Amino acid sequence: MAEFPPLYIQNSLTRKKELFTPLNAPYVGMYVCGPTVYSNVHLGNVRTFLTFDVVYRYLLFLGYEVRYVRNITDVGHLTGDSDDGEDKIGKKARLENLEPMEIVQKYTNDFHDVMRVFNMKSPSIEPSATGHIVEQIQMIEAILDRGYAYESNGSVYFNVRKYNEDHDYGALSGRKIDDLLNNTRSLDGQDEKNDPLDFALWKKADASHLMKWPSPWSDGFPGWHLECSVMSTKYLGNQFDIHGGGMDLKFPHHECEIAQNTGATGEAHSVRYWMHGNMLTVNGRKMAKSEGNGFTPEELISGNHALLERGYSPMTVRFFMLQGHYASTLDFSNEALQAAEKGLDRLMSSMASLEGLPTASDAPNPDVDTDALSARCSEAMGDDFNTPILISVLFDAVKLVNSVASERIAIDATQKERLTKLLHGYVFDVLGLTQENDADGGGSEGESDALLDLLVELRGNAKTNKDWGTADAIRNALSALGISIKDSKDGSTWERD
RNA sequence: GGUCCGAUGGCCGAGUGGCUAGGCUCAGCUCUGCAAAAGCUGCUACAGCGGUUCGAAUCCGCUUCGGACCUCCA
Image (cartoon, rainbow, N blue to C red; front, side):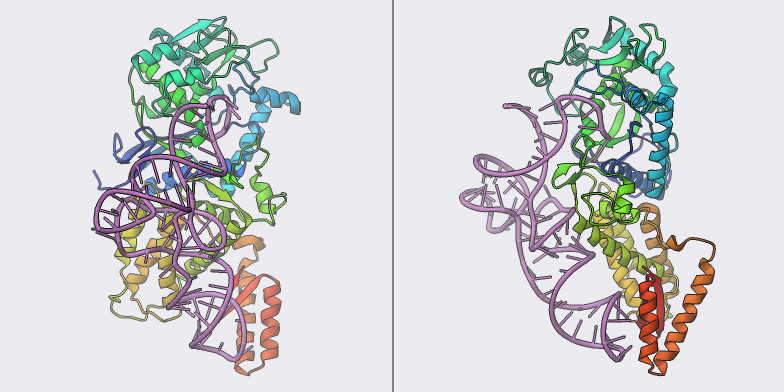
């Protein structure tokens, strides 16, 4: 087995930072709760998917073979205060006068577009709940067989108290069953349940319900928590390595997932490392659809939203989010976005200069220790994916690159190669940042580049002749077009802003 | 009401007992025809009060303020 650098993960279940040891290295199984496709994703959703995109990327970077499963929830999600609420997708379908599956397709497409714009890697498998109705029915039967569920009026409920006699309900979220009971609000339409804590595995559909399937109990639809239990274990096994999701899913969703898995097999600890990403906040408040403080990636890029002073590029947002640790709340503000934009610009300018970096030295510069830089990077990521620390190390590398570029420091070819490999690996592969200079589009890029080179050369001649008027005129004109010129003692270069 | 979490310099944001990240902003300097870029230097903070310790942003207690979950939520 290959050697992997140590990776510590903060496990939500044990509340400890643990050394990551996959069940079957080099293979890793990872499941992340995906979106419910009944409306556009907002920036808060993006943050969670970004968190696990980086986890996925880093595991791949280390050389693990990862099966990354992220579901699409296209049924079973109830609205309102009780389990008798309406299915979100069915409701939306009625509102928009579309087939439920049209809704699902529409917002799935939107979700994929967003993922692409933010340079998220596609999961290995993206299963949908409606594609696994049979398996969900089978899991309900297994849970019934073990006595942890009961049928009531065509619906099936999980028996939380019975389960808690043999296992520990509340272990993940740190809740005690009696506290839960004391604090459960009395809701309507719960008479079918033996106990308010019980949750639905299968719901009987009424006549107006659009999405329903036959089952041994009724024509109905599966409970929300069930799909994740079914799809994670189907593709990753009854026990698998990493389960991720947003902090707000910890209870009840993930708690119920654990109960279902254990209830169906009798085996505890189906998930070895639970990871939870924290919330994106706006003015200190969680960004959420219900709060009305969310905006879509489209609004973010265009700047067309009351909270936005102007638009920001997807990579700026990606970088902004990576400058905070995934387990902390991150507060959104225009000021912070603008600071991130400049920082990213500096990082990317430096990346762009790597190729043309001079190797002025025949021997390695003893003051330049690429191995140490590399070690600090892997240490940062190995400490629970600490991207802020990683970025701080990368800025040290930026400083070094810029010093070499301006010939304040000399390095040899080997050091240049290592530096390039390090920066490419962490910036492009691990953090998933990309250069965003291709905004002018079209196939004429090469031509316009050549024209720009020519203009810069002409300006250089003007400078040599001390024709400052011409030189400044060219610089100002290019600046107005979004091209900035950088002078150094060896000549000038240009860069698109 | 219950459970849990947080409070870090002008802003964002790491850091869990001594080595006092990083980005942005601001000021000065170097370079430059000027500017930009780049480099260097400076601004040295940990909500408040008490305690433990040789030593606390970091551990403990209290107070204040904020947030999350307990209902759909990434």
